[in-house]
Length: 268
Image 1 (cartoon, rainbow, N blue to C red):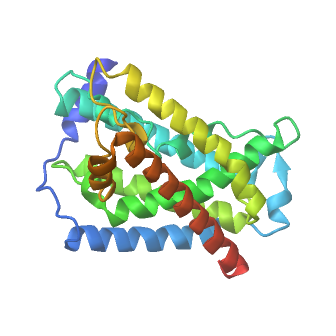
Image 2 (cartoon, helix red, strand yellow):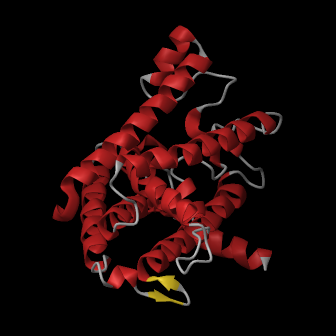
């Protein structure tokens, strides 16, 4: 089974010239992907009455999110295998451990509680609000600063772009279907989940240090923040201060996304 998987990876290791950020490839693919994400979210968004229908597999909106989570999970398995066997030749690179801000919606979509009374509503609401606000923010920001998406292989590069297109779709879908909520209270209730994810990311960064340079959420306490602007801030005031300011900016960015989606309302 492993040899078959490795053969699949090797057969899809199509080399390419690493695309330049803000070049034609980046701008054309990003523009097309964002447009398709918006259109698909609008097409698949159920009517208010349809959103209340529940089957034994959950309501239609939740099924859509779970399918997205499954697609992301399968693509992540491919990516991790490709990096391990093809790029790093049997060595694991902790830099690519799948727990960045843009990875969290995958886990939340797969862990969504059912909507038939068996699962706690506040957990489901927090998950959907997180996907709506932080997931959409992560998708947009990664495409706006795409250096981490560019690779010398077609499959890895396309994986990075399509991953963030799916995040944009999921965020818009949560907003259009009403799953993510638009009230200030819904956003505030998602903050504990964000802080929990930050704690998990920090734990991974600390405990994986002997094995590699994990930088989950870009808040590794052992060296300056790696994000643009915040690296300079970290060098000036220290890693702790730079990381705290970075996390605050993420919260403010997600709050801005939540506010904008709320203002747009039914226009979406």
